[in-house]
Image (cartoon, rainbow, N blue to C red; front, side, top):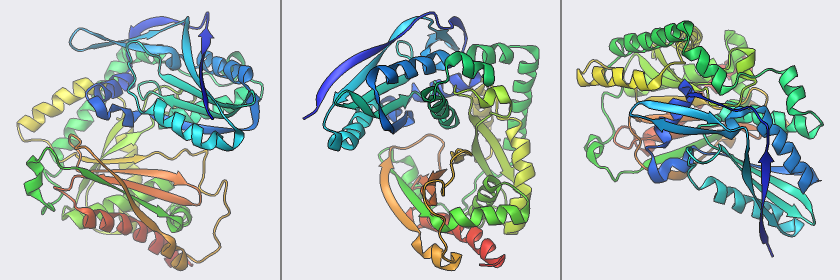
Length: 456
């Protein structure tokens, strides 16, 4: 039997203020507010087992410290006029906490249900703070903590920072001690910089980079789309595939060391090489999601700062190792220009599209892995040879999505226990299920083959 209750976290005398929204807030707010019923898929859900279980009052006190530490968790976003967005940081208020009382054996199932409930609703960003909290308690102690972040309040990299800060608070740190040890840029501070002369120059340089790359890139990547007749069908669904590869998790580090690049560059380079070979275009463009946490104060922030970089690689079909090596410099150049006023950029891109001067920029790459979390942190590294390990790859088709604007293909890289996941969603008008499998397995084989060549 499960009992349903509600508690509140009271926030008093926290930092407060009002100002223009940041570029990151504007970018995500502009997306989620137009998604309607599909908006909850942008929520960031976490279901955490607490070991050992903690008293309810202690968990609520920990979460209060977390709210005090990060302003974005008690911020609302208000539309102002036609093209304005304002952030309001509340210094006082209450956050509702859903609590479920159940037997200990039922806690995992109850936590999963609570997570689905809290994550399945859109955030009303004008009235609601960007965090939802649920507790699963058994005999007075919390066994599972459920958190759901609004994407306007945090992003995947910020969520990792948030969970590490929660661990610090549980170990005895406070908002004040963490702020002293790791100063974090708050959204109001970020907005102030973005409005400064230096911030405006960076915005202008970033948008200029986008315009230059878009006008230079190929108008279409796939020379022969899978089913172009589907392009005008508003009811078509976008399949979603997940390739789970233990071999890729082992191989990518070996290849990165050999080529003297990061493992992220290996994966993006492999994807670019495979996309070029498969599409028939010698150069490719990806909209690459960038964490934008290059400075220490930004690295300590949980707020939404991730934006897209426009990554362009010429001669991507020529040679795998060459494509990976050049990915490093091309990505670095693109990442320098991954922070900007997206609404202004969107208007400029629309003008290029209208004049038929814009390259195909409907391919998305999002390496969501947290550098602090590895695939072999909780499971033993496999001892099998890569030539054997690649036979353990699993390909699944979990779901389908509603059509996405300007998306031909979207690929996410995720860390799984003992493996790397490549999750891919594609427009069936451009790439059918067979083509999706060809791409995913092609990326895997490129990296694994390169690692085997170094010595299996």
